[in-house]
Length: 242
Image (cartoon, rainbow, N blue to C red; front, side, top):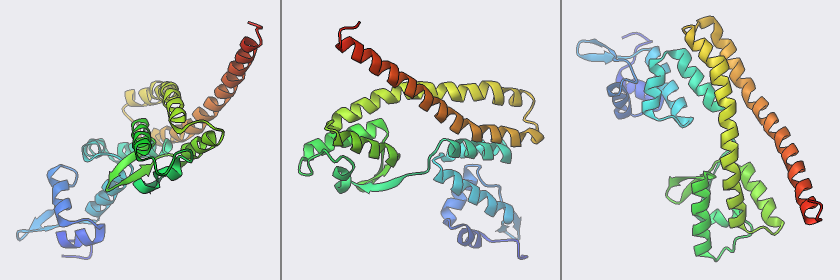
């Protein structure tokens, strides 16, 4: 065995995974089989790199089945899938505990257990919180939570703020799909039809990086226009001008 060969125990130590997980990844087709000599399996740097890639993709939220399909498409496709996730993930997440739920919603009475449960269910359904088990939740967008807190400071009840967020999210999701579909139709589809040329991968990834800020800027500009139009219409209606 040379310096760039590892037995399974060594690979587990270097990768930070258990031997059991390594063998499971092999059985799922995520990790190539080792070279066998004298009934002993030897792994190399490529196996360690693959395990690091699997860990990174798992941390980004991909399931093992999705990772297997990505890796089957080649290293470039796996990198693209990871870039897609990173492009639309603000990365600003934190873990909160059930006992701290009232700190996320300042308008909520800390002693109102029933209200806390109902509000928690709403936040989970909306996707603001993701259950992690053991009374822990991932706060997926602290920025949205801060906005909600400011709305509540204006006197808007927590449940009303969440209902408004749920309705707004429906419309925002539709707009987001428009931008993603635009990218897939106009940039990805021609690239795929050409057989994924290796020299075009940098342009594909660059276009993906630029899509998020362009989409967000467009959304902000459209939202400003819509708010102005809605406010003007409401004022005119209340003043009897319409």
